[in-house]
Picture 1 (tube, rainbow, N blue to C red):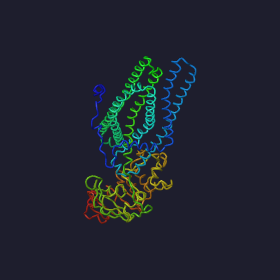
Picture 2: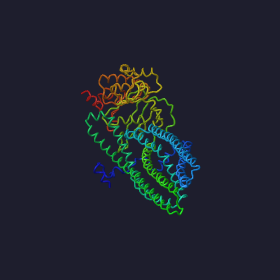
Picture 3: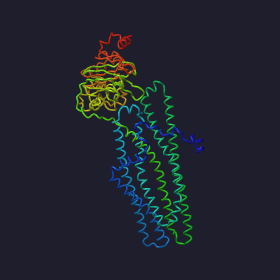
Picture 4: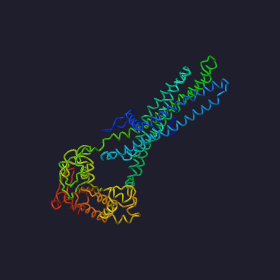
Length: 607
């Protein structure tokens, strides 16, 4: 089928099964349920019930006026034009004009109010989704493409917005118009009504055949949009890596594949959906011809079954009868697309949030005594990433974790920050199990300095103040001075008022790190987590960063991950990680010269 399209335009006749197949449901994700999705959208709309009732009243009024209009025209034809009586004809014309003027006002108001209802509902959906993003655990974002999540915030919700704006009134109006039109038609001529309704089985069969295909296609299209957005966001964020490894051709190839999938799904979704108005117009014209032809014959026989006015009414009603059917069929496709988008949004909102069951210790001021007791943890694959890890770091001590990449150093940090919870064992802070500490209490007294510092699109002042939002300008400047960042900040065009881009492209990697340290200083934390804070930095900048870090670590319990062993020489404790286990631990002076792993690493570094 459709081979005639494929050859001249290059479109495949059908989508592959891969394009249309239902994606595997992830654990915890709700199954497809259109009724549930529609009910949830309705609840959002129903929150503005008073205004919604007013809209529905206006829809009923406009539907009634649109039905009575043709009836009034037929009455004028029979009683005045055919009868040749023109007394009162002017009043009837004025009444007809008033009918259609009232119809216009009712349609304007219902559209205006419905736009307000739909935008508030969509606003609530969007803010609800964004708020839920803030409550989801880190592990959720670790396994999702950020661009795909952004697609749900934008494209999917916009789909729902367009449907609420345009389809809600249209569907309700079409149903009322259809019921009212059939009732009036039956009262005028059951015979012509039956003739008009002969097209319904054909319409039903055609629409069912089409929507059976468009439903799957719209879901495939939404999925393809999300995947493409995810790939675009990923490639733009990693553009330096793409260029560094000359992978432009591979990225373009991947983009072309995903874009081609979206093109195919979009083409066939619109192609099948486009059949509906064509089929409906064809059947509509057929019904019009049947009513006009048979009605004319009945009128000419003169048996009084049908008058000329009745034929005029029915020719209009024949169109008015098929128009709501046509509208319903078209809106059904739009609703299918909105359901596909809403389902993807609700799937995220149904994800389990990061629950904090800890009720006590909310006001606890931590001292920084950290202990791991036989802790084991895995990210969900086979086996554990870290296993049997036990150590203790007392308040104010600096503990350094060293070892090969993948040894489990960062995982220890993730567990300490409660981005993940241990599968086995126990983590205690000041003798309190970490699971009994509210995450907000723990993280508000913890600061992070990471390998790749993240800066927001805001001023330098606001980026540093992000560590503690109530910090004064003076406190921010003092923190920047302690972090050795003040001098370079003052050389920027607007000093502390300089607005940085999202990736901080205007300043160097080392300067970003100094701002990150200043942010941590402003936070005044009890626990300090440093993850490769001096990697990829030139020697001069590293000295500044190291000096700033030493100031930052004073009086705080610090955990340091570093590949450069010279950055951990002043640590109180050294923990050597190997294959997820704690292979060696002790104080610097105990490990140096012992011939153990750390001693060998030091000797290798000196070489």
